[in-house]
Structures are given as structure tokens and as C-alpha cells.
Length: 437
Figure 1 (cartoon, one colour):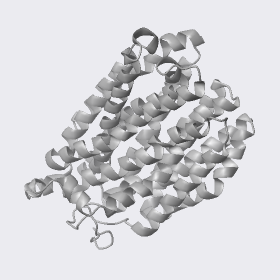
Figure 2: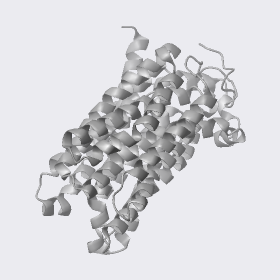
Figure 3: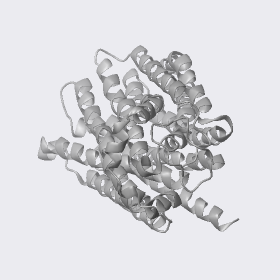
């Protein structure tokens, strides 16, 4: 193995570990929102109203993600990818640890939900800056012909982080209910301190992106403000956002909100968490597989397959969920996560191929995090609002279909991006004229 190959593998592993730590913390909050936060931090006589408030607090983290993308995107485009990623990981670890230390509503009253939402916003800012940098560290080291495969490893971090958080919560859910509600829910957040140390240890030793270094030596990063440059021609950012909405909406519906919905229609917690566990495992396999396929078949082809699949199968999958059969529930969740993987896997490579080096961190982060905000941030809130009159799967399937259609339209406009050079200085909106490596 050559020195370049060893360096790329080390960078991919460090990005995977860092992204796993970040998404462990971020998705842990989502799981706890469905399980305990509505009772401990947003109490009310009406459980549905409390759930809406809790998911609204969770959405605040998604609102903050584009802000994190703008803030850390600017830093990453000016000072470098590596130091930015160390900062985002530290912010996430500290915020998550503090959530585990928070007093509940019963202890300090209204200050409890305020502090919880504030820390959720800090999480959102951190993960908003993390993903773009982690993707670019790998994309800007890899060759054009292997970019999808290596990006798939990093993309798997979101699923791995979710899997890790699910395993921890599932283990702790075996505690007596009173113990879990009093102290057990805190343990996964307190473990963030350990994961932070591991992540920082791995990340500190990697090298800076050669593409960014070359641009820095040419003094190009000093010209203009990245956000201003990106927004001057906003087409690529809007298309990047639209392309990702399908995957994020599906993630919210078949991972985050599925816990709340299945609880409301009568599934036991153990069955729900088991289905979630199998779904995350399926997603972990699907993401790198579809990412690698995008190097051969193209980003658009693979993502289009996933978007069309959710439009066609949304209603049948929810029919399986409503059957009150454990095997059918698991099948529906696994299928939903596989379809999500087809859209999510190639997304990082596609977005990195849509922007110039000097604004790539900002453009990729902003497009991706806006998709996360609209697709995953507001979907649970919208879904819970539509369930106030009682649990119904029809509106949930309708949301999935609509999000798939948005992604289909965006992909048709974007065209194919596989093979584009990341070293080129093409304008951000020049989606079809960039030279190939």
C-alpha cells in the first residue's frame, strides 16, 4: 500500500470516528425526545401537546445546523478543514455532557426546558459545521474515480452514531421504569465525554486537505466572503438542499418519529427499539454500498432510484407498520432505511462536486444543513402536529411521497456530477462545465 493510500485510509477512519461521535450525540437527543423529554422537560396534562413541544425543542437543533454550517464553513474555507473539525467535535461533546447533567422541570421549573433547548442549539451548531468538513477532508484527498466509495465510509458515521446511541438506550431501557426516568437516561449523555476524548485523539493526527492547501498557497482563500460568494448565485445551494430533503425526511419518519408513532398505536418499547436497531444496521450497510455504486453508475442514478422508491412504496410500508406485526414492522423500518441509504450515501460526493474549493465548505455545509432542517428538523414536528387527533399513517406517508418528489425534481435539474475535478476553479453555479480529473 502506498503512503498516499495509507494517509487516505487514516483520514477516512478519523472522519468516520468524528462523525460517529457527533451523530451519537445528536441522534441520542432525538431518541430521548421520543422517550423521556416530553415527560421530564415539557410536562403537560395533554401528552400530545407535550410531545409537540418536545419535538419543537428538537427542531431547534436543526434550525441551528445551517448557522453552524455558515459559521464553521467560513472558518473552514479560510483557516482549514482540520482545525475546524476539532472545534466542532469539542463543542458537541461538551453540550451533550451538560445535557446529562441538567435538572428537570420538576427541579427548576421553566428554566429546565430553556436550558435543554439552548444545549440542543449548541449541538446543532456543532453538527452543522462537522459534516461538511468531514466529507471534504476525504473528498479532497480521494481521486475522482473513488470519491463515492471513500465518502460512503464517512457517511456511514451518521448511521453508526445512531446505532451506538440505540444500543446504549436499549440496554438502559431494561432498567426499572422509575430508574430509567430518574437517572438512567442521563448515562448515554455523560458517556459523551469519553467518546469526545477518543474522537479528538484520532482526529488530531490527520493531515490538512491538499486541495485547500494548494488554494491557500495561491492566496485564493483571502478573497471575499464565502457566504456572500455562494449566495450571489444561490442555485447550487438550493438544489443541494432539495436533493437532500428526501433522505432527511425519510430518516425523520422511519427513525426518529417512528418511535413516537409506534408507541401511540400500541407497540411495546422493546419491539420499537429492536426495529430501530435493525433499521440502523440496514442503513449502515446501504450507505457505503450505494456510495460505491455511485462511482460506477453515477450519483444521480443511484439517488434517483431511492427517491422513486419512496414515492412508490411509502403507503405500502406504513401499511406494514399498521399491521401490529413485529416482523412486518421490522421489515418496513429496514426497507425505509435502505431507501434512505440510496439517497444519502452518494449525497456527500455529489455536493462536494458542486462547489469551488474557496467556498466548498460553506456551500456544501449550507446546502446539506438546510436539507436537514427542512427534511429532518421540521418533519417530526409536522408529523406530531398531524397526529393530535389520533395516530394515522396516511399523513406520514404523504410527507414521505412529497419529500421524494422534491428530490426527484432537484436531481433532474442538477444532472450528473460524478468525475468532476475538485481542483478546478469553476464558478459555484457552473454545474455542467467543470473539467474532469
